[in-house]
Length: 92
Image (cartoon, rainbow, N blue to C red):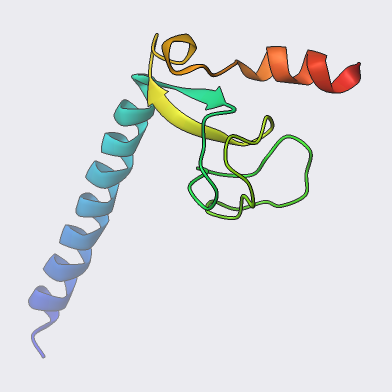
């Protein structure tokens, strides 16, 4: 195979990955974690209690320590709470 083709393909792949990672960062900038609104199996990542460490592993609807990303400013409207509020409740 032509060495130029291999190099240009590799360079294109690296550039494309860079663009994708920046797009993901921009998406998260417009979002916030909202606790207590995720349905079973629809959480976005690890929960606060540490019983699992991956998305989609919540077992109950609206678990207080499970979260989803929502548009900034909409969490309270959805009946959710911030991480600080949930952590304070967990200490009680």
